[in-house]
Amino acid sequence: MTQKFSFALNGRDGKARTGIISTPRGEIRTPAFMPVGTAATVKAMLPENVRATGADILLGNTYHLMLRPTAERIDRLGGLHRFMNWDRPILTDSGGFQVMSLAALRKLTEKGVTFKSHIDGSRHEVTPERSMEIQKLLGSDIVMCFDECPALPASEEDVAKSMRLSMRWAARSRDAFGDRPGHALFGIQQGGVTQDLRAESAEALREIGFDGYAVGGLAVGEGQEAMFGVLDYAPDMLPEDKPRYLMGVGKPDDIVGAVARGIDMMDCVLPSRSGRTGQAFTRFGVVNIKNARHQDDPRPLDADCTCPACRNYSRAYLHHVYRSQEIIASMLLTWHNLHYYQELMQGMRDAIADGRFDAFQAAFHDRRKDGDIAPL
Ligand SMILES: [Zn+2]
Image 1 (cartoon, rainbow, N blue to C red):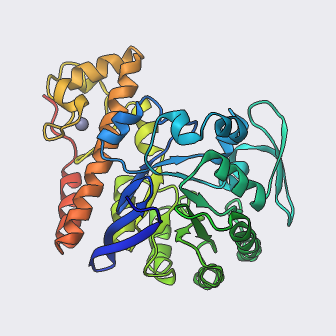
Image 2 (spheres, rainbow, N blue to C red):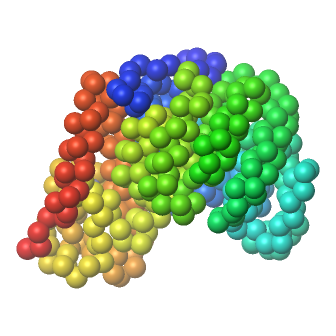
């Protein structure tokens, strides 16, 4: 197995790309969807079951892990892979986004951010240097630059100011990361929905040089049309030969649209979180298992799905255990949703490699238009 981090493109269809990211901990097939393991677990799933859905890589949240159980403790216990029993690649975010969205009493300076923990009120400081240190202690394979995201809505002037601060932090992140063979550091493009600012950000990142590039600051409530508007040009500004990662996206149709625009990696809590709230993603769109129409329905969620929830259980059973608040409801629906997402990714990888991505997209949208199977 390779000891280096590398990316090879194996096929393209229009702007869509398919390839392989190689790391010492295994290969990541792209386009890739990364399930989110916020607190060192993908909720309701054993790691081997997450792998069985087809996931090559997980995402871990720096903010949550630094507060509890702390990066230092995870390091003493052998690193995040060993701690959570996942030996394949892990990408960690920088903590920046969640400091902004979850922590209290935030104070932002040129140096970094100080804040109070949302768990116990303790005071913390995260700087680009500290974020690199935490992600190293966790043993992350793909490390993200520490950046700042302005709260929306924001004026163009504020977005520009924030983006330029993030670019200075990107340079400090690069310096602090140093030379770590087999580990990758990704830069994050900012600039909101303004093309000139996106270009300026991309130029600054290329100047510094990274192993991969994320499109940041999207999926924060701007809506799909605005997001696709940015994705029509933003990925093209980033180096061709490096992976491009769209952070925090998304719903199945967001993912297909992002891949069509040249994105290689994505992550989102949606399939796991929705599984716990009774929502299933299927080829027909979203199915709400809590709906009374399922209570006498002996059919599976999706007759063509090979996940355990669909192979072994009826809609009536899933409805019953969800309504009874049984833990197995979260387990089965999360499994199904992650399985569906990974099958979608595999379908896209195959379609891109075969040069039939347009037909794949048309079929994807057609099936969803018809909606769920008719009630019995
Ligand atoms: Zn299923």
